[in-house]
Amino acid sequence: MAHSSFEHSNHGRPILVFGRDGQVGRSLQFCLRESGVPTVFLSRADCDLSCELSINQILNHYQPQVIINAAAYTAVDKAEAERDLAFAINAKAPELMARYIAKVDNGTLVHYSTDYVFADTKQEPYLESDRVGPVEYLNVYGQSKLAGELAIERLFNTSDDFNRASITDKFARYFILRTSWIYGDGGNFIRTMLRLASERDQLKVVANQVGVPTSAQWLAEVSVHMVRSRIESGIYHAVPDGEVSWHGLAVFAIERAVSYGMRMEVKPENILPILASDYPAPANRPHNSRFDNQKLKKALSDMAFTGQYPYWREQVENYVKQLVKESQSN
Ligand SMILES: NC(=O)c1ccc[n+]([C@@H]2O[C@H](COP(=O)([O-])OP(=O)(O)OC[C@H]3O[C@@H](n4cnc5c(N)ncnc54)[C@H](OP(=O)(O)O)[C@@H]3O)[C@@H](O)[C@H]2O)c1
Image: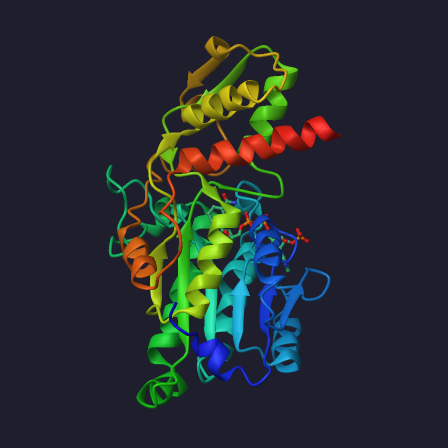
């Protein structure tokens, strides 16, 4: 494996992880616990990302070499009514993190973004080079996440300190990992479907929105590997292979749970496909959330990331198996 710029020159500066208690944050705790690298995990109580002063104080206090920002305002529907708060957390906070890291020799910022920066401008999987937006068709959450992406890229590509550091080969890097449909240790679609399937004899699930379910654990492992490798800065579409609709995902997860012995009220034929327009919500969501992951795949294979690149089905199957096991031991 390529040696990390981090391990070569961290001078005792820690990795700082924001969003300790979120799905990705919890998986990062699991990945980094045994790494031997000094790491500080911050909750909302430790640092409120809607408060610039609090962020700057934390950065000055810890002087991190690496920031992994797993925190975000993720309440997609609520964001429609809380635009300023969503922008403070999803756009201003990552901008401050980027401003800090761009000046750190061998510094790295890992930030997560979303399929919601695209608004159904194509039917095929989106490439990193595809045009985002149009902004007026994005929901507020998507707009705020896009503003975060643009702020990071602007900071890294125009900062004097960053340009000076590039010349000395100690340049700071950033990774914006666009991902989708995350499941892990926390509330998510798969957990909700399994709970509802055990309570109700009929479910109606949206069938005309298609995306890629992504394991928080896998995403955390990829993130740590990218920090440790010499992968180039930029945006990466970080999802497993394959695609499925919400309805297809619900059917698959419920069938797998039944096969592992979970008792369900609903029969497969009573999991009914519906249109997104039959299930109105405050925030608009895209129909096409497919991502092309070739750029990430190539970067990881160049950096000797272990194991085969995953397909979403195997990872969801393992997750469901784990959930059933946990429910049986309670
Ligand atoms: N979930 C998805 O399907 C999905 C899809 C695409 C992209 N993403 C992106 O992936 C990343 C991780 O998502 P996730 O599913 O792990 O999110 P999550 O489970 O909702 O966790 C978000 C974390 O952010 C923290 N947070 C929220 N407001 C904060 C504030 N003002 N100050 C400090 N911390 C704050 C939350 O703290 P509390 O624990 O105190 O609430 C929580 O720990 C995010 O950038 C998200 O936008 C997620």
